[in-house]
Structures are given as C-alpha cells and as structure tokens.
Image (tube, rainbow, N blue to C red; front, side, top):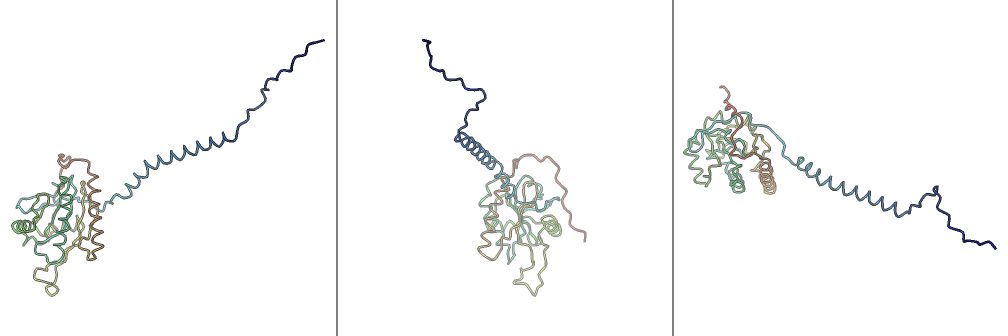
Length: 258
C-alpha cells in the first residue's frame, strides 16, 4: 500500500502583495504632520522676531547733514559732530523762558537720570536767546538746577546760525517773536517749538516728542515712549563712542545771508 505524506503548505506566490495595515498609514501621516508643525514652529521662532523687530524700529525722519558750531557754558567752542557715534536728545531752551522751557529741561533731566551714565548718550540744549544766555548765564542756570554733568551741553553763540540750524537741520518749527501786547510777562519773548528730537549715532533724526503735552495721561505715555525709544536706538549702536571717526566732519551750517 503506497505511503501517503501530508500535503505541504505551498510557498507564497511571488504575485501576492503584503497587506498594509491601516494603523501604519495613520502613523505615517501623524509623523508627517508632526514634522511639519515642528518645522513651522522653528521657522516662526527665527523669522517672526526678526520681522517684528524691523517693524518696531523707529523710522528715519531726517538727517543732520551739516555741522553746528557753537559755544558751550564753559566758553569753549564745540561742534555737534563731536557727538558722532552717540545717541542724543536736542531741544530749544532759554534760561528766562516763562512757558515750556522749564518742563523741557525737567523731562530731559529725567532721561539723563535714566541714561546719563551710558557713555553713548548725550543731551543738547540750544539757546534761542543767546544775547542773554551768555556762557556765564548758562553756567549759573546749570548750577542752580544741578545740571552740571559734562554729557549735557548748554549751547549759545550766533543767534541766526543757531536758529537756522534748528529749523533747517533738526526741523523744529521756526521761532516767532511774541508781540508785546500778547506777552504774559516781560520775559515772554518767543513762541518756539518745545519738542525734543531724538538723534541716533549716525546723525539721523528718529522721532520728536511733545514733552509739554498738557494732558497728564498723554504726557506720561509720551515719556514712556521716549524712554523706550532711547533704549531701542542705543541698542543699534555697534561702534563704541570712543572709536576714532573714519570720515571728516561736515562743514558747519552757515546762517542765511541777511
């Protein structure tokens, strides 16, 4: 009787395709989605802060193309170009002003208290009444008000040259003589711009601040913005203020011919 052997399992056909389980597909999709989310997050972490930083950067409103030669409270001749590489505030003042000058000085004093120890920061007050504001008068004013730090210049000199510079270079409003009938006191001589200009290390005017705004809430917001903007512009300074200048200083601006 012939021997019978158990039938052997046939080998799998080469034409058969392995079965792909559904969970494998979903796992692959999940990996792709997760990878996309991680990549997007990393991209946003690198790009968004840079875009935001550029969007928040103060605009360039003008540039001090000319130099200003003046006399400081010590009687020494100085040039504004000596501040190249520094951030500074500049504004009008005259020592007997009965209107906004005292407040302008107080607000600049607040910024001096905040940033005055930074060698990259400076303040400049320009007299619009130099026939009265002699170096001696400016020294007395500084001493009385405790404004004797050397990083705050009080400048006097030729009236036409000073006013011309502040109007044509800093772009403050022109000074207007107040008629005698409209004066609040004998010293109420001039209607002048009381804004403070912020100038960066490359001599660009970056912003103006109406620090004499009468509304206390608005005034507080203006001062907060001024403080924040100074910090922002200081952060842009990459060359130490003590580094030697690489280019010649521009010629001083000349007053208009009479």
